[in-house]
Amino acid sequence: MEAMNESLGQDMHDFVRNLFPICRSLTGNGTRETLSIIQQHLPGLVIHEVPSGTQAFDWTVPDEWNITSARLVDPSGKTVVDFADNNLHVVGYSEPVNQKIDLADLQNHLYSLPDQPDAIPYVTSYYKRRWGFCLTDKERQKLQPGIYDVQIDSRLEPGSLTYGELVLPGESSEEVFLSTYVCHPSMANNELSGPAVATWLAKWLSEGPRKFTYRFVFIPETIGSICYISRNLDALRKNVVAGFNISCVGDDRCYSFLPSRAGNTISDRAAIHALKYHSPDYISYSFLDRASDERQYCSPGVDMPIASIMRSKYGCYPEYHTSLDDLNLVTPSGLFGAYSALRRAIELIDANAIWRTTTLCEPQLGKRGLYPTISTARGAYSLRGMMNLLAYADGTRDLIELADTIGENAYDCLPILDKLERHGLVERISKSRAEIA
Image (cartoon, rainbow, N blue to C red; front, side, top):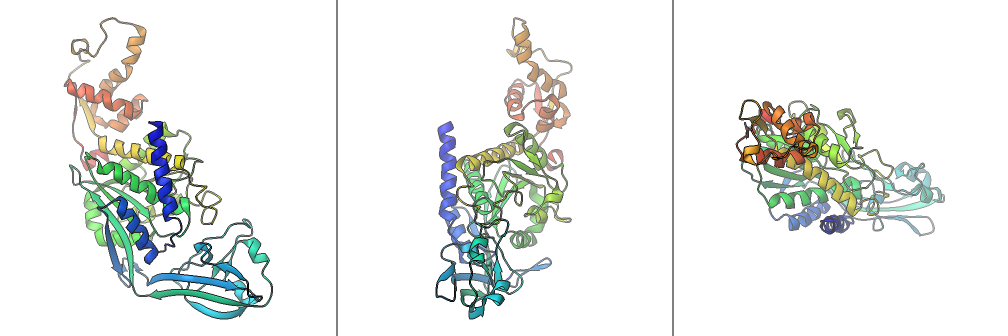
């Protein structure tokens, strides 16, 4: 089992390494290339194009941006910044430029981090036309006075926003919704860990069986989720009963939980229970700390039950949105750990049901082979979980609440409840939206 876990984590890390060099943005060929690679792993992934100018609630899909090359050449003719070396070197959505400029004026177009002098910052300007270069503060301090040659070969023109969608039908039309984003350039934890873990969760769920239908979306952050919701709002309201936004799930430092806006959905309860036994020292955040697509999914009027299980939360680790968020920060064990935590939460959601005993008073377990024929202290202790489940399975508690009430791991309770069900001692009342919310 351990070897299999290491192999799966390494497979995800190899996937991240493969996608790392690609320059992604809200739109453009880098996003399409990324989705095409994901599609090789998930053949059922459907790729959608939304034309520039499309209205999505209060937003408009922007022009498509593609970049071929960019260089900043100093007065001596030396290239001091080259997009080919790191695609974070250019401000995202920079308009095309070919001009000479004095260093004093150039400084208005340069971005660096004095408190992280070895890091290249990630900077974008999606909705206002500008251009710029990002570089380490060490390199910025070395720039000499004089005239610099600025070359940015990019295109900003009508095109489309691209996203991918995978639907895995289950026994029920009710859905678990899983979202991740594909819009950042070469950053490993903030960008690529999410698509990696989401892809491998989809592979696992593809093997079936599935109680719920599972819907995966690989989208550009913010405008992508807003666009997706605007195109599918009625269906999302009708069908989605649980889900997770998958982001920053690749490092080894910690686990983090961010709730839905409601805070008490099945997604929240499953995540909290899963993390309690997977990594009890996890960090719990408030919805006030939100900063990813849960903002859109949980917004008033949309109100999807979307929570987040993460490793180091976005904005809370020093490498965030810099070139230091690299393939060394994200590890096979970090990816596998997040995959395992999310898988456990999903398994809880899929297995959740309200349970009720079928007999008045305690059933006679001995005649069913469920109780030892010799009474010992140790034997009584081993039966405690079964007896406690019978005591609290009164038709008002689902699996997670039952487990929390008796202080046991729901994964340990499930086989006991299954055994009791086979003997006709408990029954599942239902598994409807209302009863698992």
